Amino acid sequence: MAQSQNTRVDLTIKATSFLGLGTYGSVMLGDKAFEFYNEKNPEDYIQIPWDQVDYVAASVLFGGRVIPRFALFTKENGHFAFSTRDNKRTLRAMRAYVPEDRLLRSLSFLDVVGQGLKGLVGRIFGRKR
Image (cartoon, rainbow, N blue to C red; front, side, top):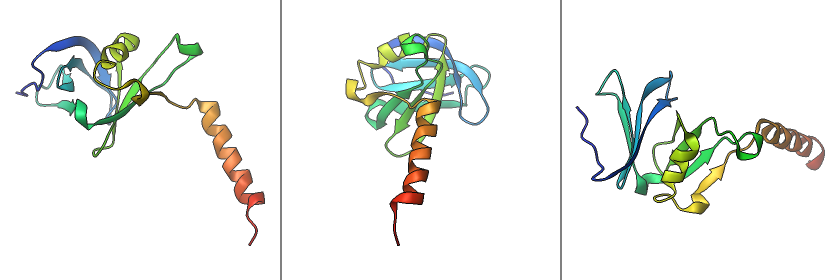
């Protein structure tokens, strides 16, 4: 059984982890770490201490009315994507532990395509050998 790193819990909410296949469980935000626990297998858990979180990126749709998912990017171990029942509430609770300039909006699909096209045109016409 996993031992929680938190001494005080601010929010517990149903969630889905997108690490590999989707896994259902609960997210717990506390004073020491972000924790995800699988509801069927107690040995399947993710614990990310707040000092290891580099930044949080959220997918934002319709001008901020819908946030379908967010990802925590760590300093050493890559990134972890999650979705909770109320992502806005979860991100607001994270504000106490992650600085405001580290809560970012991820690029939209059109932004990614636009940057790819701009880079492609720059490679074709910009460089002279």
